[in-house]
Length: 408
Image (cartoon, rainbow, N blue to C red; front, side):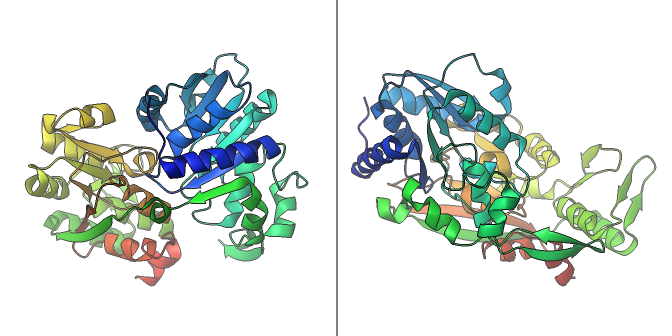
């Protein structure tokens, strides 16, 4: 049976006290500090807990199972991904653990995921443990729908987000396509103040992590065809082939198409897609083929390019990665949370996401308490769009069409 670290033991004891008083708590523990093991231990210390439901992302299930087997809790644990909640067995859940809770934070309307978790909590009246390394990565307003399904949440007098916004958000108006719309991004700090009694915050620094993350930007010259096509799309807003069409008739679509094309892939108006330039995949293979690495890609055709170049030397499954010499390829959004790439020598990015959350979370996948250095490599097309995106997300901001417009 595994023993918790001293700080995990302290957090578990504090969380149990909060839950006994308030019915739930929020573990705001940074990545790699062991919030999964801590949450499983908390559930084991609560009274009359026989059935625990752990909701997470699909790729994280295997590592959570490993942690549970090490802990050997007294309760029965059922782990499920968000997309499969409709398949749950008919069981009365005494405790529900919600992993990566910030993914419930869409606003002003709740996401389907947030509604599903709310229904589960209302049906079972369980102890509830929310967890995230980044509870409000883009706006304090993201907190409302994470907690609105919990009976004892601090915003319970506000039945809907719009009511909540009147007290907790500095609402502004923005003009979109000629029409004015309310913008709710500027949530007030009072949101976190009112959540503080329910939250336990813990950083990597608090845990004694001393990892030095070294970022390296590598530029590659894409094929002449890639630059020619991107130039044509910028000028004409359309590329017509014999069978397919690439259309960029708005700034948003132009930004998205160039994001794909500078890395050598494209999605057509028909919905079909293709790889037309393997330069980046070949560059990664040529420079890192002797190393066990984690590769993050953005678009599905980028994975196809990697598979063609790497052949059997690449996997998309974490278990196979951990138990072989193969490198692993993960889509940025699905792979940025809940998994550990501690066995990777380095992380290499085929492309970059517009999201600051994706940047900060995915680059930290190798971090452990005992690791002193992380090597992260970004592979950018020379004169492409990726550098501009990188400079924005570094500042913890999302890359938007306004940035794209200003970059020309």
